[in-house]
Image (cartoon, rainbow, N blue to C red):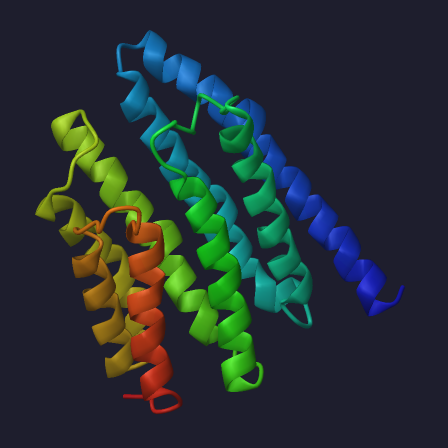
Length: 221
């Protein structure tokens, strides 16, 4: 089996997994959370964090193992961004994880694809530059959202969530040395702030990507 065909089959399997997560899995979780008394908006944002972990984060970890280049996964990210944008455009949102007032889940897909693409191109193939910011966005941001909802029962910003994010991101960043550690701390701090339509799905990977790129390849301790 040639490489392209094999990787296309793998990508199809991963895409099917994503559709399972954003479809029946999170829809059932939404209904369960609402039935237990959580507000709809809290259930929506918890679902987004679950999707961050089970789709964006998990697949980013698998890219170096399953693919020779990130071209096909980047194509998947673009496809998912379009698919998730369509409900906003038509006014028929997927109510268990989308809202009418923002398209942050679309931003997530776009940021995922751009980080992977630019990291690959700017380093001549070192996928770590793209993957590490994606892991901050997928795992770190997910944890901060979950912690905040547990503590406050609503979608809000709190430094407790950022501390939880730092606990997740710093070991990831530290694997790249002091610059990686700095990128983790900056990402964990900047997540606390939103700038209009520029949300943390943009600021977290952008800030950490810039630090890692400007310090590349001097990452080791």
